[in-house]
Length: 153
Image (cartoon, rainbow, N blue to C red; front, side, top):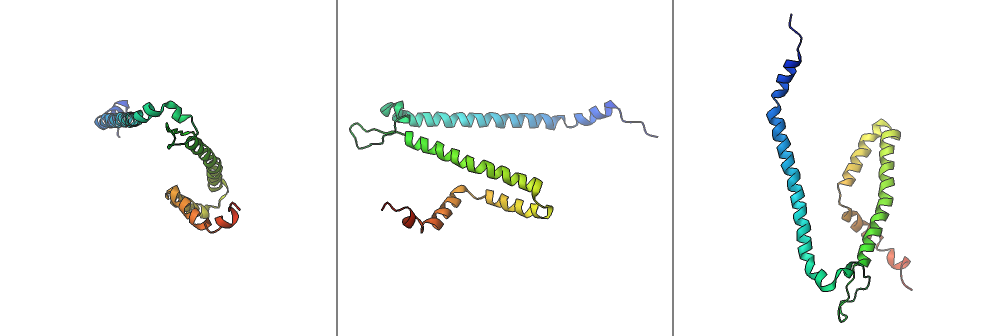
């Protein structure tokens, strides 16, 4: 009859993984620190690259909506593009979040079991396509309708 395994056996078994655990700990810590250093380098590079323009045109560049590069002195404002970026991002999230949650709820709660796998795979394939491809496809498909519906006349 064998003796029951005690806490000593567990400790000895776990100690066999100690080197791997310590190695994994330091590798992941080094990777995390390198990500932070790379991010800091990118931020510094952006500041250094933008500094001459900010010195020339001032920080009002970020809050001016007029864009007149041929004026004397030139007036360059980024408020329009910044505002457009924020508005389109909010609109995209207002569309994407309910659709994503709806698909998740449908797949987990409503969808029949035999249909979950094919729909899930189709959604994963669609998620792998960059959004610019969808935009170009929609633009090419809807371009023939633009002149008749959106003409200035």
